[in-house]
Length: 146
Image 1 (tube, rainbow, N blue to C red):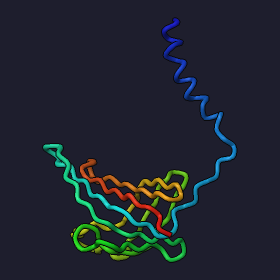
Image 2: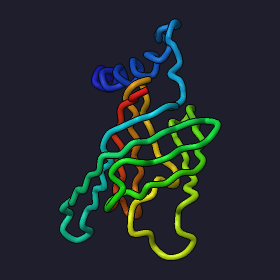
Image 3: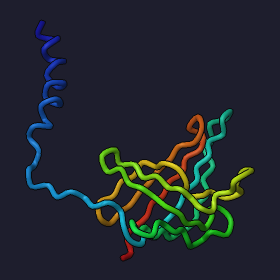
Image 4: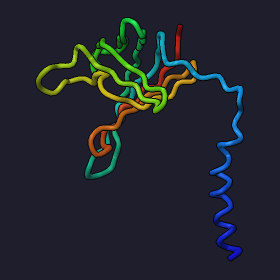
């Protein structure tokens, strides 16, 4: 019986730890402004499991009233684009609707389009999206510049 209680203790501790949080925490605002940094496209080969990574330096401007715009190194890997976006801060998701996304066919470059999980602390802004069967990962590691 003592062994069962020993295993139950960490669970109870984790369950009750949420009750002892700081009451003075300041909410982090939604991402807004100009961000610069690296975009990474990680593609895992479905048979070998080996990952291939390609990178590009981009700039992302987020404005709640006018939408978003991607500029920077958009010559080969990531498309320069613009459109609308919405933030769900409860689930830490951000959804982009790219107005330049091709209506037919498969785009030759990555477009900032669809839903991404994000982390934002007021300075660092990171986003990630997973493709089919988790063989494609899109990562954005950006810093606020203004």
